[in-house]
Structure formats: structure tokens, C-alpha cells
Length: 466
Image 1 (spheres, helix red, strand yellow):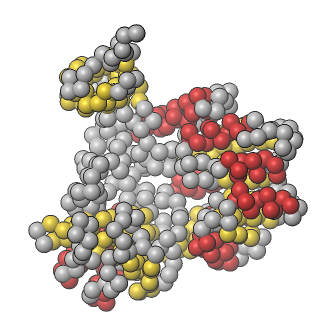
Image 2 (cartoon, one colour; image 1 turned 120 degrees about the horizontal axis):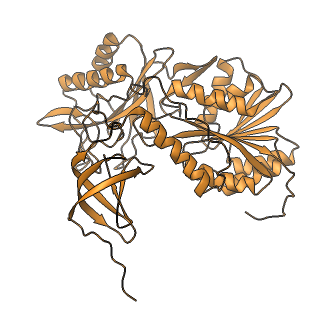
């Protein structure tokens, strides 16, 4: 049998017409049916492309020159190629269309639920300056500190690129100020090749509603040189700073934060509000980075949950209690479970902070805790899940369906794993009613979703293995 070969060769230059987008935002063009994925290209465009990689069923190209441009092509606000926000070359309307199609394709090809409505994606009025948190690496050049993002596929810092168009603008100002002050004080940057130096990362968090600011300085060393002078200058310049934290990370690692943190000025927490709920946020708290869209996402989750005053709710993957406390405003009782002890500690603090007494939080793996709850006679009316990108554990899906709630509300940051898990739930007595995409991360290929799943028949426990 003749060996199949691609119709193009590596390093060949070709003319390509683009007809589609991948879920990452790469343009798709075909040569004799063979797809080439090309960054920065848009549907309806034509261009000269250098073939950079050839696989059996698809290849990758580099756009050399456009000979025909799409009306959806716009001038990027930022020209730094850090790979953090790779969709700036396309209009925001096309970004939303691409993400809507990503969710629809996952529902069709993975979940086999093409009949389920995918509602029009909820976008932003202003898709810039939305991030309330940033972690910036620190390096050194010619004896001076530099800050900025890593160049794509490298650990080389693109100098002074801490001013990012997706960040809350005050974050950019704070990072620049930290860099300038530490430079003047002679604090050395961490060198990851030599594993010496001091300052590794600068993290800044802000409260959208409160305007609170937290600065976290991550060092290799147990001591932060010139600590008092640094704090005095920084807090004088930014009166909204409520907390300065020193985090120590001794290890040779890509992990940003170390295990040891100490508040060196101000409070352990800053605060922010989503709707009527106030949240205390520590240096390591998980808190959504786009507060405006988070409110829209959680309002949709609350709508789908359709909670009555007599209902009991379980919030799996509850984190610091963000969704739990929203649900507690309507429910008789909410039980949150989360594997991270610090998150549960924060969740309990947040419940107390808001005077919420009908929410309880437990440390543990949801797939193990929930069967135990069922044995104790806990029968939830609604279960809410907001898992990481890998989706729900199979045992958790099994535990959820065996508890037989009336409704499951699934909040997802990955349409593919959402669709996979919906298929499992469909096969265990549940029906997906609709899916609502939300653009939580404009200028990137990521999309958040909220899905409503209702029980349509009782599931006989043990009748089927996952």
C-alpha cells in the first residue's frame, strides 16, 4: 500500500485561503483537503504562508504576508508576543462568534447534544482592562531590574511589558512602581539559571468594588532587603494598598508561590464585592479574575438553580465560597466541599463576614464526601459544580447522580470536558436543558459556560458502571 504523504513540505511557501478558526483562534486553510493551522489568520483572508510543521493529518504554518484582509481584522492594542492574549487582531464580535461556535461544536461532537440550545454568549461592554490579578516575573539586564511577561515558548522576559491591556490599569502602575523602587534600593532579581538573587515575582491583586490593593513580593531569600523603605514608599504612592505580603520560595521551580507567607504591612486580606456578597481575599485565595463577568455568570447559575426557601444545595469545588454564598441567599441550607483546607478556612470567614449562617463548609474530595453525606440522609435538591479545566472526576459524577437532585448546575471553564461530563449525566437519568457561554477572558481563546441539567427519570443505583 502506498504511504500517505501530505501535499505540502516543511519550509515550503504557499498561497492559502482561510476558511475557519480553531478553538485557539488559529486560521484554518486547506491544500487538497489537508488542513494547515496558521496563527494570526482570519476566515475570508488570503495570504502567503511558510509551512513550519507537517503531520500526517494536519500541519502548521507561519503567516508571511496577507494578500486579502478580513473586515474583522483590527490593529492590536498591544504588539508584545507573550501569548497571553492572542486574539487582539480580530474584532470583538468575531471573538465572541468563535467562542460561541467552540461551545456548539463541543456539544455536537463530544456530548452528541446538538439539539440543546446554546444561548448567545454574554460578552463585555469593554473587553480590556478587566483582570484584577497579575503575577509578573522579575529579571535583570545590565544590572537593572526588568519586569515583564515571558516571550512565547521561552523563559526570556520581554523587557518592561508589565503594562498589559487586559489588566486593571492600577495594577500596571503598581508593578512599575515596585520595579522602580526595588531598583533604587539595589534589590537583586532572582536568576533561575544560577539559583541566586532575591526577587522572583511581583503579584498584585485588586478589589473591583472596594479598590483595595494587595502586593505580594515573592523572594528566594527568607529576608526581603530594605523591606521597611520599600513598604513606606509603595504605600505612600498608593493609598489604596491594604496589604503587603512577603512570600518565600526557595525551590528551583516554575511554581510561583512558595509555602511560607508573612504579612509585612497591613492586613492578611483585601475585600471585594460581587453583588451583595463581600469576599475576603488572601494572597493564595482562588477568586475569579474578571469580576464584572463573574457577576453575570453567577447570576445565571442562580437562575438555573431556581432555589426555593426549603431547598438544600451542595456546592462541590466550592473554593472560598463564592457560589455557595450566592446560593445561600435563597436556599434553606448550603453545603460546600473543597479539597484545599485554606480555601475552606476562607469560605467560613466569608460566611461570617456576610452574616450567613445557613452555609457549612467541609474539607475533602467531593466524590468521597458526597456518598458519606448520602449515607447520613442528606438529599440535595440542587447540586452546583465548578470544576477545574479537567472537568469532574468520574466518581463525582456517579455520586451526584446517585443523590438524585432535581437539578445540577455545571459551571465550566472548558467546553470539551463540560460536553464529556454532560454525556455521562445524560446516560444516568438527566437531560441538559441549555448552555450559557460567558466571555470571562476577552482577547484569549478561553470561554466559560453555565449549563442547566435536570433529572428526567430516576436512576437505578448500580444498574450501570461508568
